Amino acid sequence: ALQDLKAEGKSVVGTFCTYSPKELIYAAGAVPVSLCASDEGPINAAHAELPRNLCPLIKASYGYAVTKKCPYMNASDIVVGETTCDGKKKMYELLAKYKEVRVLELPNMTNKRSLELWTQELREFKSYLEQRFGAKITDEKLKETIELFNEERDALNELMELGKLNPTPISGSEMHQVLFASDYIYDKREKIRMLRSYVKALREKDMSGAKRKKRIIITGCPSGGIYEKVVKQIEELGADVVAFENCTGTKNFKNNVETQGDLVANIAERYLKIPCSVMYQNDARSDIIKEFIHEYQAHGVIDVVLSGCHTYAIETNKIKEASREAGANYMSLETDYSKQDVGQIRTRLEAFIELLG
Ligand code: BJ8
Image 1 (cartoon, rainbow, N blue to C red):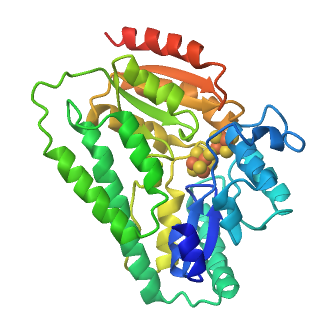
Image 2 (tube, helix red, strand yellow; image 1 turned 60 degrees about the horizontal axis):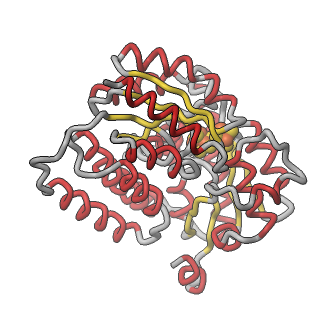
């Protein structure tokens, strides 16, 4: 599908983070694609330049630039990054050898001054996109795009909210697969239509006789690369994953962009609300965890930390506290993209699920 779009003359913009303001890219007539790698295959190729103890997501993503084996990376005309964690920031410097890279200065805080800086950064990014792709991002075009993305976020929220049903008509691994794969459907209207008819069918599914299981929320680092050994194993052990508080899940689609007034400022405001651990005093994440434990009637929270991700590792105590306050058990799980710890993780998951009663 991406090749067809390229053949039609569309430009492709590779992104690495949920903070990438996709509405601006789309309104410039380009297609945003995610380049966050989720498999260990290309990691070795990155080791010549990146330290071994760096987060696997960064190494694998960079490895794909080196090996040129990722069709999405290969198709990208430019790559957009943000100043999030140190590892990503420094990786973008190296990536510039392979791709035109534009790094947006994302502030480290979420206060008024940070919002002003971020808004200004997005105004400059808008001009850069206009120039780079010879496009004019009119207010009308931007509003239309924002409305489309808001609808897409609503549809994704509706999908995740199926997890609030008890018993839930969708398994966590199905939900994860749909959330992950739907990111690669480029016809947004078609994607919204597909998601809505899928959700409707699941809401109408006959669940009488279905067993109620122990319910778990996954939080922490993006889960694309650890889905098999965490999400699937949880289900094999008889529990359900009912929600994803991460960038595969709710961080990607919680909060819409206001469609009245200064549209670029509205986009900046929506994206700065993403509760990522890279932010100083990221209290919003604890609040969401507490809210989710009640709304999804969760018995447990599993906080996934990719090895080498300091910001999520440091937040584990805070999330543990929030989980316990809201009445759920908590476990933090540090892992990477390798298969070496599959057995060890299974043992820990088994013990945790047993603890849920
Ligand atoms: S908004 S979670 S996509 S920064 S796991 S590379 S933080 S060392 S992926 Fe992330 Fe944006 Fe935040 Fe989401 Fe660094 Fe941590 Fe690795 Fe990470």
